[in-house]
Length: 184
Image (cartoon, rainbow, N blue to C red; front, side, top):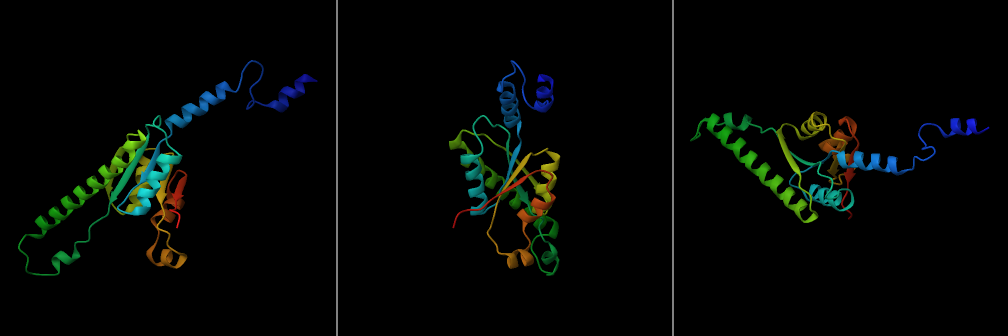
């Protein structure tokens, strides 16, 4: 009746000389190849989420860390509300966009500096757009396997009025989303 034992064991369980080493190696290869993205902005919450991921989730062997910072769309309707301005609206808009780009790149450099003491080098990405949409698009485009975000700790009423980028991503990103909340 050993044949029945083989059927009950199934394909998932190693048989005979195959030890669990093969499955452990496969797991290690999958873990090493995992693409993790941390959504980063100019908040203490996102800094904490990145630090938490570096401390508890990632190791120097995980070279697939991506740090993403969205560049929100700028609102320009106020530029045309006044008839007296020194620079043309096109120049003003261009300057505002360039300043925002520089600020975003500086934020990404700060994020990379947070990674350095942990021995992890991260790839950085940025895109212009509504943060919640930009994050989900980058997750899809770069085949991210885990998205990590900080939580601002808003209550249900604040989320209802202000919306929540993390809540949107939990429901719309095509990968698991880990929300890291800083202890009070």
